[in-house]
Image (cartoon, rainbow, N blue to C red; front, top):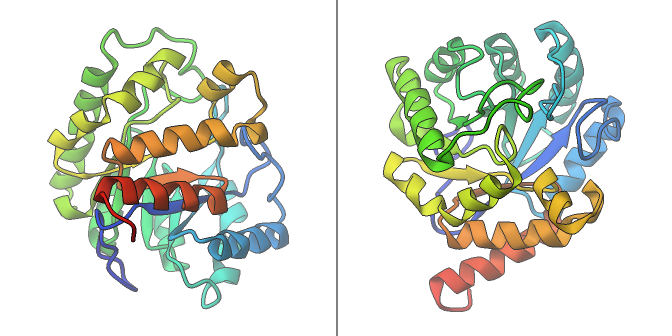
Length: 278
């Protein structure tokens, strides 16, 4: 992936994307880093823990969540982006589904756009990515956050994900985004049943046919809570299992909350893939 500040090689080792939710209502840490000063401290802690990318989001897309305006979203993330400019050394990804937010975030220093709707919410996001020449993460979401866990699930989850991501890729390519700048995400937990989330991890190699790098986010999600009977901040071991499985199945980037621990998981998983100690 070519960024303004550097090039990130995908495939040599797993890239760790650390999550920073600047929201009052995210499922795993809602409100914890809502205040700018706390968000800035957490961003620097994520970098210190070993993350390769910092993913900042100002709008919760958890199941049942309601959307917010672009102005409100920017009011949450812009102070953090401005404070981190020239301070943090790892690249910043903006987690948004709005072109206006992406444009402003890039102007404030973000170098990657992460769209959980795969361009369904705002196709102009692709134009922003193309014009600004930033990598674009396209995630598959079935339905909308408010209702996605209440509507019928796909009969064949992998076929549904592949169909949706092919559409997203086509929209991005028509806007001028280079194929090498597109990353796909199957959208664990976004309009999928608990069983389907496990199936997607097991069948992750089938996403390779899309010809793009693969990102996956399983961290602390509800399907792990269903299996383990644990609250979000108690799902670290379940997350570790899914991160290792995803890496061994071909994921290039893993999006996680518990960065220091998942750096260790990724390093060992990478050594297993290589068949040697590095």
